[in-house]
Amino acid sequence: MLVLFGLKEKKTNRGEISRYCPVCGRETQHTQEDRATHFTLYFIPVLPFGTKQVQRCNLCGHETKAPQ
Image (cartoon, rainbow, N blue to C red):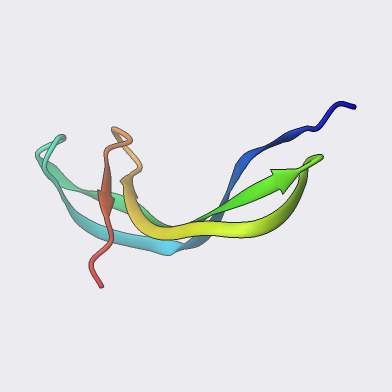
């Protein structure tokens, strides 16, 4: 019997903000995202594994943890 399991990350866009990027060295647009990881069984999300909030620079792609 073959059992297929794994992890899947779902991204939810929460909007955009303008802030300073330490990698680019300038004020750029950052996308705010919620990311939820789920344990999957036969490609069906079964259990939530964890969530996090990140801000990603739209110019260089640098990601930081969103402030609470």
